[in-house]
Amino acid sequence: MTAQVIAIANCKGGTGKTTTTVNLAAELTHRGRRVLLVDLDAQGHAGLGFGIFADQDEATAHQVFRRPDVNIAEAIRPSAWAGLDVLPADPAFKIHGTASDPHRLAKALAGLGDRYDTILIDTPPSADVPLVAALTAAHCVLVPSQLTHLAHHGLTQFSRLFFTVATGLNPLLNAFAIVPIQVDMRMHLQQTILAKLLQDFGSERIFRGIRTDVALAEAFGVRRPIRNYRPTTRGARDYNLLADDVFCFWAH
Image 1 (cartoon, helix red, strand yellow):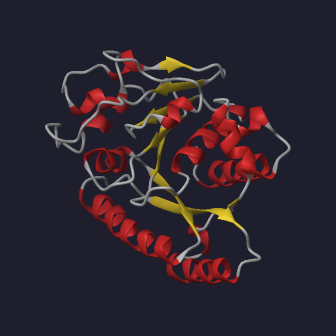
Image 2: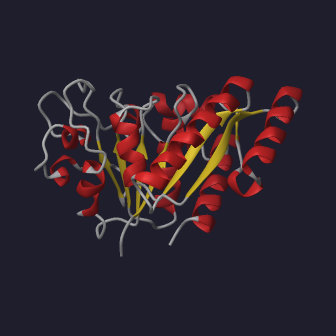
């Protein structure tokens, strides 16, 4: 069976991509999926969410952009959670001088398809080589977004990139869904933006949102997903429901 590849992406920073990647990985693993988390953001925070990071000169996910013959499996690290592995980021990674072949990541991950049910890719917040490569490797995309006017504008920009890749580079990229984050529906602005999203993208592309919860930030501080840190909080409940949406809509 070929692994399902899900990119967690947005061209705007601070949208909760890494938080979503870490906690969705934990939720899918809890449901019995074999999960590989690929950290393509050079900050390395997705790996750090599970206490995993690459030291200098260690193999990383970013090697695929430097060497065409790299065996990406050499960089895989097991996590403390059964069924969940991590491909850590290279904190020294620079865009300049890297290979521009957008299919290189897809080719590298194809060799791992039988080892995993789901591959989650945490992407950097810019439309550069790693993000395009992630979309070229993915079957579907989750787009975390705040419910603000600027975030709405960013989603419009990202949707253009999505359809450019889907129609030109990756015919297997067949779906994306928006995940509202820091949700507080008592705010009129959020109600307005959510209504716009439903009008622009359709209800089938708007997944259940993640409410504001300080426990999500605290969980990162102790390098654990929220379900293992404070499983009764609203953040834990919301990511559990998000995993249900992903599992039912996209899972094999």
